[in-house]
Image 1 (cartoon, one colour):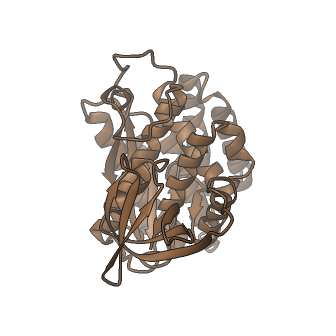
Image 2 (tube, rainbow, N blue to C red):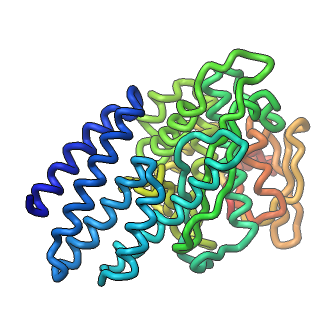
Length: 368
């Protein structure tokens, strides 16, 4: 058989495996093994002077061994190709990412904790980001936001009332827990795996850990790509939808520290979620149109750029320092802790409505 015939057979088997992955995982795994064998045979038949075809086939073969859960075979092939072949840059980088993903998966399998299959890969690049390095406060704030969105997803699927104050309950956190793992350095990356902890005590668990994980990704995708329609259809509850939208907006770059965040469902995801300045603007426009209070007669709109110094949501105010002058803004009671907490003592832009008396009421807040 030729390269084309082996490759076509591999694609056919892999498509069958993908179709059975959710309903018949054992059968799917066997098909992935056969698909990997066919692609490995195709790799042996590639003309060494066709460098791009060689790279694409090598990545495909290693990825299929990984999907087949044959980690040792995937690593052997990846190391051999990296050591022997003259590969294009994209193929070398993808093989290195696959190796790191395999090592992380092996670690999770050896752990006492039970994890869902695979892990999200989150990367940030541009601005202050270095290869394998990023400002600690930036990373911590984004990790906290991802965790907030994840637990909000659990609460949404559990049909719980929209939470405005405090952290997610212990029972929500007991359903499944996000973990942070190292990922191959390309800009700055980390992996988020989901531990399937078990059922909470106070209520019956409605969704499985896999379903929660899938909804989490879908919510991020809808908020980023189509907040007007897709997100509204997925999340009819306006309070929940507004919170998901504002938290996702907070993940996107302002342009000061970095330029793009990429979230991949796994190392093989070719259609990742991309958050950049343009997606942030799309979300901000929807928030401005659908989730901010209208201006009353006699009020003017203004934006305060400064540092968030104090918040008292129960008493309905926040305080922002603008060029050393402390200004109090009222009417923040509908803002949830998850949105405003990570912004404490950080540069912010607060949109306000100014009444003729000079009293300022809250409209929206973003990182400055």
